[in-house]
Length: 120
Image (cartoon, rainbow, N blue to C red):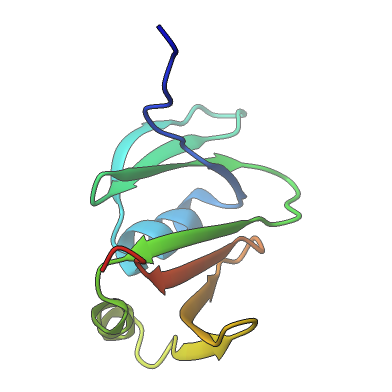
């Protein structure tokens, strides 16, 4: 039997615990599934929203990453994010096909690109 991939969980490098929770939980609306946090060791947090997960790992340095998140309603996502941080994001059209996107860059240079799901 051929194995199948059940899910993929990206791990993003982040900085301070407090900033990480503020950005991903309080603003972007993720919930903390579990966290590993001991003194003198880097923390790791698993977060989930709508059945999709990320892991966030403390790192001294980050070159950033790029993750695309497909949502069922891009306009509703815009309203939700701006309701938590007034006028913090907007929908813009990006090449090559003028795709409507919301770009969110966290303090550690990770780019989250929200797009309308192609299945909608």
